[in-house]
Length: 341
Image 1 (tube, rainbow, N blue to C red):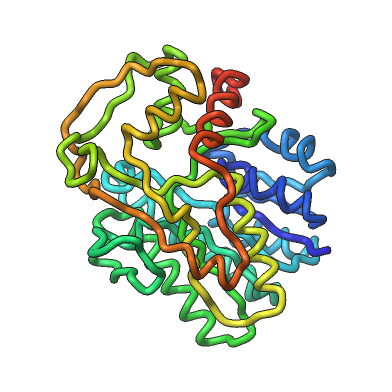
Image 2 (image 1 turned 120 degrees about the vertical axis):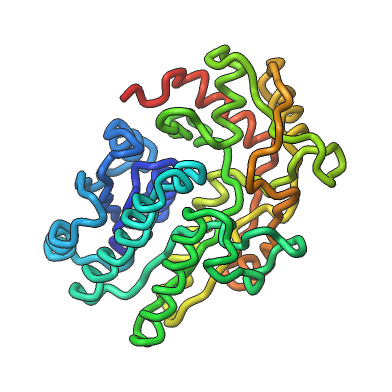
């Protein structure tokens, strides 16, 4: 099989994908600076994947260090997760986000060009769609970078444009742009899960921590949206389904050139209140909630049209909202303080 370099491979989606790559028979090399993760993840990936991986604690922006990795190993393809992803933080510190997300992608592509590695799966985001004009969102509905309403999303638009330009300049390149919607859940073993640094921004860590009593309540931001119950609707998918999408995308790239964008989503939206109800049913816990004012920039509904990924990659989600919640709760119970940095 192939040797795959995974940048940001000890993070939430990266670690789950690394396990699936090992299970598919690939060799895995991980580059991660551990800014938002823990080296504990490496041994857990190896335990679940059944074999050793090679790990470099390296920043993706370090071109010389990356070139050394490529010179030491014959690498067939790259899966690029390494990035910062907190929308509020990107608004407060846009320079950091451009430095890491755009600068890191530039550095990686420079190292790939020098090593003549031309196959890349890029971790993009549904954030690039900006404020949806219609739902579900198809791949050709993306906006210009200036129409996206936060710096995090703009860095993803810019990186997608960069990769399109590289593919136009060098037709030997093969790139898949994977636009995630809202991954939640955890590995069913409870060994891997979402462990955000600081105050979590995503829905599930807040739900599980409220259920554990680690925070006083779960905040619902806005109950006056034009949705069925007034709370925002999002397209949630299990992180295991999302990880399978990366393996499918790699398989696709091995015999293709050019660049394609794919939505990775469930195709069905769930409101915040529906997620709370599903979590309470899966966990047997009652989650204390508090209604808060809307957050700036939040949209009413965001939902994927995943038909392109189904048709071309042969990928679709399999796991239910109940499974997403049950696996996230198992992770939280087994790891009450995350990976305990």
